[in-house]
Length: 239
Image (tube, rainbow, N blue to C red; front, side):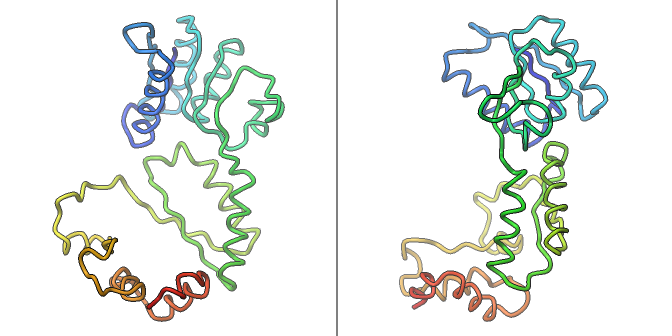
């Protein structure tokens, strides 16, 4: 199995590799027993993907695993005969990986996120839920940007059509907070509300929400009333 990656390390690579190897193991394929990987990494340099894909193709692998579009593009030009599996792709028809979703008809297969259609619909739904909204924030891990640039581009275009301003909020790889003191966790902007009434037995839903919004900026009461309006069931249980 040829395996082409943009980077050797990183959250996307770690998550994808773990799932891919686990899936192969479930299917009965284990490295060193009945499976051999021909791995190549571009070490973050997109220009190296093409030559590395040709190296993999020259090794006469049975299939190429290309986690995201940049790697799949390189595999596409390296060989039109070796089956290629892509972990996620926004719209395989638009990028010419498939004739149609029902009948792909080409040598690339994988999973589509359908985000080409869903991103715009999600933003439109948000404008209906919160009338008058003008600015929308989206969380982005810079380490994953190369792998999700197409989705970000679609989001920005959809926001422009809807008259929205898209604000990128960078969220980098997190740190382990298990064992950390509650006040230290709170200073990091993370609030916790214990479930099951095991700690504060008389805490109402409203009290829990106020505790959760302790570090929030602006008028917390106004925010709570707005969310109660959006979620009537929650309002019924506010206590």
